[in-house]
Image (cartoon, rainbow, N blue to C red; front, side, top):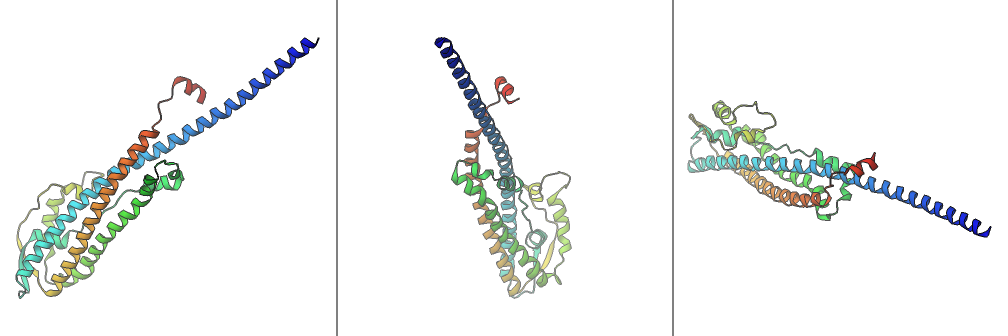
Length: 267
């Protein structure tokens, strides 16, 4: 009789342990699945950020090339104006007029994926603290470089144009611009990218107004552009390091494909 009661007690204890283990296993499995889902979501977001950074790297590279052309043109114009300080009009080729006065490239970076990552709160899940800091700071670095370019554009529109508009025929730059920029049919391609590698055409010479105020203002604009180029170069270096760290984070987190057993369990 005692043996029977002992046997039932062992059976009940065993059954209880099985139930407890089953409950704990269910909790562990649920936690594992939740962690996998969180990791998968983070990998997807980081992959989107990676593609976005690649695109921004290309945009910044094109911007540097375009701004370098503008600086080259304005420096060439200044050399001609400086060589004839007593002349109120100096003959220059239309290409220099286009680069110095008719072309003001701008950057429009894509930051949607990065903003989505930060807004989602998943930035804190990234294991590399330096990567977290760099992802949070890329927007401000870009905006800082864009600000230099914006000031140069403001100098052009608000100071240089008023000084030259009455005596300078800007119509001569239209033909140069049309051939230089080419077709606008390519979607997703910026003006700077379309013009990359193209030589600048030249058709005629035009008189450019010359005065100390004009030369000084063009020199100031050029200084701002050169500062912008330097800061964009820092952005490229920053993005390069960021992409390397991001690739390492993705390699660490990249989930394996679910096996058939995992698919059944997740179902």
